[in-house]
Image (spheres, helix red, strand yellow):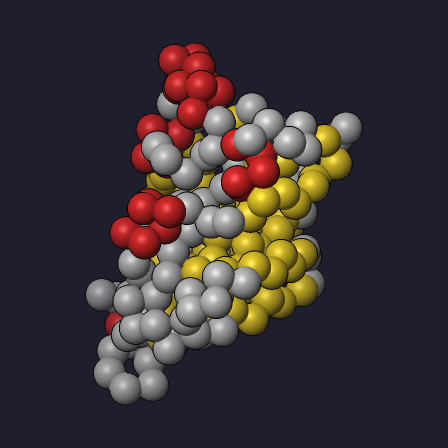
Length: 195
C-alpha cells in the first residue's frame, strides 16, 4: 500500500475515480440473482454485459480503530422495472456501522435489520449522509438519470459478507412506475402486484 494513501487521497467527485487506486467493476453478469425479474435480466444480458457499478476502495490503515473508505459509482438503468443496484451486503463483523455520503446523482439506500427483517429506505443525494447501523444489510439503488456517486466510510475490520443476501435478497425493491421511483415488497411484485 502506498503510505501516502493512509493520510491523503485525491478523488474526482464527478467520476468517482481515486488517484492511484484501481477500481473494481461489477458488470451485469456479476449481479445474477440480485434483480427480481429473471426474464428481464436474462434478456438484458443477451443484449450486453455493461458495467453497473464501480468501487475504488482505500485501505487507510490497519489495526484497532482504523477506517477504510470507498468511492462508488452506480450507473443509471433498469432491468425490467427495477433500477440498477449494488449487490448489497452485511458486514462480516456485524456490529460495524457505515456512513454513506452522497456526492452526485439521485439514489436510495435499502436498509434491512438482520434480526427483525424491518426495512427502511433512505434518500442518498448530493450533500447528504446516510448512517447504516450495525447488523443491517444495505444496498444502493440509482433512481436517477445520471451516475450516482457516493463515498462509504467503515471500520477496517468490517469486512463484506454477500452470502446471506445472495440466498434471500432484500425484502424491498425500487421500481420505476410512470417515471418515478416506487418502493415495493419483493414478494408482492413477484405475485404480479404493483406493476
